[in-house]
Length: 208
Ligand SMILES: Cc1cc2nc3c(=O)[nH]c(=O)nc-3n(C[C@H](O)[C@H](O)[C@H](O)COP(=O)(O)O)c2cc1C
Image (cartoon, rainbow, N blue to C red; front, side):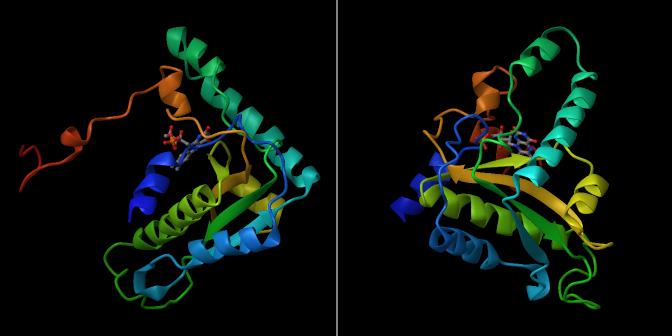
């Protein structure tokens, strides 16, 4: 119990602290098994995991991410632009490997139990697998960094992901020098964490 809460609060999104050290096959298996144990709508298990070790593939993706970073940077000006310039948004080349998590909306269909009214429930399931993966990696003493500065078509093409299957996350994974106590974006003054009491409503929206 104590351990789970400790891992939840120790988890961080990592960009700068990857050491590039090895991830043993046993540890990687445990992390992937934790992801694969996630709950899913109608037990559809709509996820797959592409383990990317190739430096060539990672370099190609990194180049794409860098150009998408420029696209976002161009939407900013003034202090926000200055702040963003100081923020590292990925550790693709520094991390030991990456795992791309995908979503197959056709898995378990037709008639996925519990998805008839909420199509996004499939996507929620994939995000739960990602969170399991993230927490398991943290428990193993590793870091994870989620990279979302990419176009889905580009990543699908790069990894040969079939039509209809969506890449949901590029996750950098590996040993780290340390996990920061405060999220990077908070340390850089980009955004603050919201107090829990503002996120909790009683009986109806806005009820305190
Ligand atoms: C869906 C999603 C996409 C994200 N994409 C990026 C990203 O492209 N680059 C990045 O540096 N961090 C990314 N993050 C990490 C968030 O910035 C981070 O989770 C947040 O600042 C809170 O920090 P923490 O995870 O260390 O608690 C992403 C996180 C999520 C959940």
